Image 1 (spheres, rainbow, N blue to C red):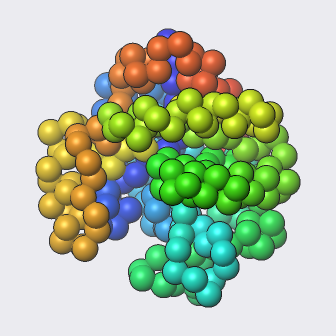
Image 2: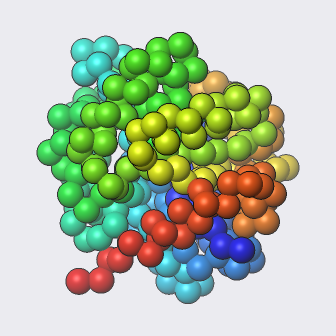
Length: 260
């Protein structure tokens, strides 16, 4: 029973995330995870601490970022979540460059990138579609199915075989409803799915503290208590019958190496 969490927020997801990196890595070790990703929203400030803690606990670090993607260009405020993971040193450099450029396009405290920047700095990167706020889920749930599919077509054109639809189950009705739709579209577009966690805090009991933090920063409260850091057992229980998509997290992990 294997699973690699490729979508994880820490306290560096400012005003949204609660997980402190040392505690997160300790929990990953407790869960017998040999690899773990960091994908904070809009920044890579936690990279150094994450790498050091992973080394201490003999866990392979996976470096990524949850970008605020501007699907209609920088003139409009709307953003969607786009998770980019570095599969090699070039990928890390391109994520660093995208973060730098995103800070030149901030609206509402959200540093943003658009499709043209992704086209320019995509080498060495694996693309994930994000959770309910992502480049597919968000417009699809809003009824903009054509926009959702157009996003994926554009990203597929850029990333070829390095794009995956994300499947998350954080205990919400929307998760239950959107998962079959994602799988149906993924098959029609020949793009694989991968299960991710999308956590903002470590334990279920941290949900209330996370919401208090979010309210302090004028962010919307998270529904329920399902955005905790899940064990391999939690994931396999939530995605019974979808073992192929769980295993794709392992497939992706095998493609990631930061050795020169």
